Structures are given as C-alpha cells and as structure tokens.
Amino acid sequence: MKQQKPKNKKGQISTEVLYAVGTMVLIFLLLTGITFNRKLDLKKTDDYLKKRTECLKISNTISSISAAGEGTERIISITYNVTIFKTSRISVSETEIKPKTIEAVCSYTGNLAKDVNIAGIGNYIFNNTKGAVEVGKVS
Image 1 (cartoon, rainbow, N blue to C red):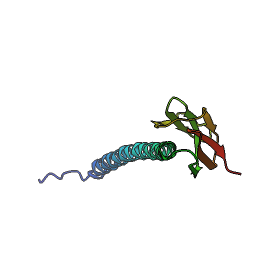
Image 2 (tube, rainbow, N blue to C red):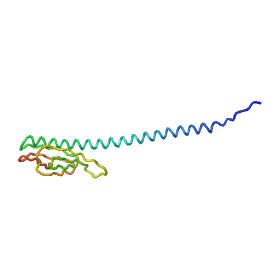
Image 3 (tube, rainbow, N blue to C red):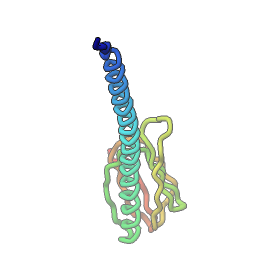
Image 4 (cartoon, rainbow, N blue to C red):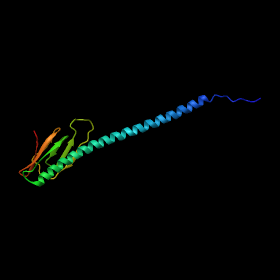
C-alpha cells in the first residue's frame, strides 16, 4: 500500500509570507527614518546658510562703506534679527524664538559708530559719517 503525504503546507506557506512581508515593512520603516533624518539635516543646513549669507551681506556692506569714505551710504534689506558689535562681530539669528536655533556669526573690517541691534525685517541704511559707519532704519 502506498503512503500518502499530508497536504498541510498552507500553514507553512502563510508563515513564510508573513515573515517576508514583515521583513519588507521593517526595511521600509528603516529607510523612512533615515530619509526623515536627512531631510531635517538639510533643513538646518539651509537655514544656517541663509543666515550666513545675510551675515556676509551686512559684513560686505560695512566694509565697503568704511573703505569708500565719508558720505557713502547704502540701503539693504534685512530679513533676520542682527546684532552688530563694534568689536567687528556680527550675529544673525531667527526673527522668532525657536528651540535649538543656530546663529550665524561673521566679522567685518571697518569702524562702526556704536553697537547696533536690528530686530526684524526691513530696509536699513548704512552710511559713513565722520569715518564711522552708522546704521538706521529707513522709514
């Protein structure tokens, strides 16, 4: 008499399919997490580069006005909070207070009349008066 093998392989196949699907879902979640972290890093880098560009724009303005001599003036648009120190240091930060924000810092060559705090968006005039650069808001 011939022995028949049981045909109960459906249970084993469904377990293997569940294992394969679970592995694929796990890989997908890992890739999603890595992509999300990279996106956050790129956003932080982009924010920093925008602040750094603003800082260098102000630095170049102060340096060129100082070098050009008395009576020189220039109007520029500023989109961040900026602190300009007489010690040749410029600090650029967000207009809104956010946790874990990064400041951009740069330096300039020239003579600033006094420390300046620029709060917020607007047009500002930089002018060379008596050999020192003064900063004022354009009305």
